[in-house]
Length: 449
Image (cartoon, rainbow, N blue to C red; front, side, top):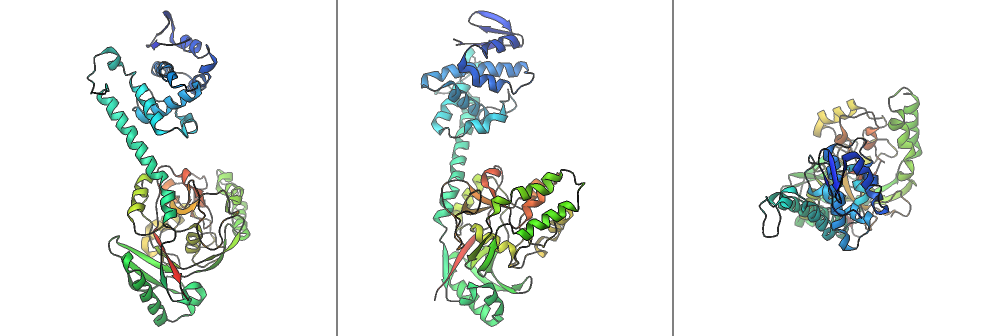
């Protein structure tokens, strides 16, 4: 059984025998079935450098040190690889990152710290007795690494708490008597005097949320009541309710097909056009959904680290919009259009026009920058709309949240269908947005009899 090993630039010493490093590593990785996982990881390196070979030897030693915990070889490798990824400087003996994410899911925090400690204990200065250690026997680098692990654990817990926090606030709302708010058509038929009365009633009901009515604004064919939140330096639109067909309609699919047929020589043609059509099941079945009125921020927050977004949501007095509300708001009362700007397939020039126009370019409800940032919603992610609520409420449950948009995060585009993130129907899981998320605060409006 392999218990101890050292690798320098030329020679491996194991159990008193010496071999050239590449041959010795090959021998070690074929000695016992329990090293099959290590062998798989090592194969990721087509031509290992001495530093990488040395890292492999460290894996083997640390695997044995973790054996007392009663874990299988595969489990020990997973723990160790995760510790290397999170607790060691990435420019020093870089770990084989291609397998990290799949292998590390589900490892509990305490075991992660133990694995990190086992790895850090192999630090050469500690082994030689030349390093200064603290009262727990850790070098300054080891302490820094473990502090980093602890920080990552705390951030991960914060991000994992977004779903429960969002669901706990999903019923936040104010109450008014204003039948006109139930339906966009009825709102459009009301005169400005009545709209002002309704908006002032909403302001009175929403006083505890710090919202003040600032007036009616017209962005398309109808006026919208706009509210200011001084503390957030944000404006909110009062979006009337209504019914619409949620999801990627046949008309929208045909628009994409026609664009693809008209552009047969496009680079990465599949990603540019066909990929969206192949993903249509995630945006179906197309179903009629009825949404109640709500207030929603005209601007999304700047994209931030998911942990920062979690902290921001915790501090806000508002909630996340539901997926049904967000799509209704993005479509702006215009059914079956491909994007909030119409039916044209977005190009980089289309996107640059949006960047340049800023607040001067809005959808009919006055919302800005739709599809640009990856906006997190209240709903738990599901691969399609089967069984989803049709009353505008959120689908609840444990797991990642639904995200809409994100086109500016992959700009400049690489002809890989990035424009699809700007469409009204495309949706994704928050798992797909590991590094950046945004939020657009909302507040429900309940119409009483």
